[in-house]
Image (cartoon, rainbow, N blue to C red; front, side, top):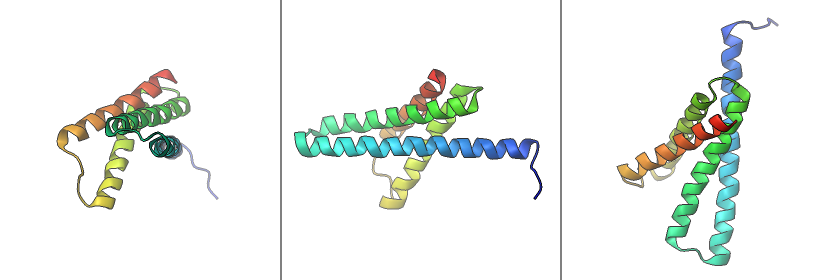
Length: 128
């Protein structure tokens, strides 16, 4: 087996780091949505509370993913966090398109969600 050196190895490491951070963000999403579901079932939350909970889930999840990628990257943390937030949003959009075969919200909601995901990831990267 040959040992990889140079940029190829660095790119592989960055790709693995991004996947680790995305996995962290989506695990956090699952946990927070499970908590939100239990609260909906037990407390009978209103639609406004559910929407606020979903927004909070996006921000906390991308923040945690941005924090992880910031720790793993070590340099230009806020840019890596921003990239992670954008990738989280794109993956979220692709999953939504795969399930519903159309966009379920208007353009303003999509832009708001994009900004929340990108901002949460960047903030997590900056804090790391």
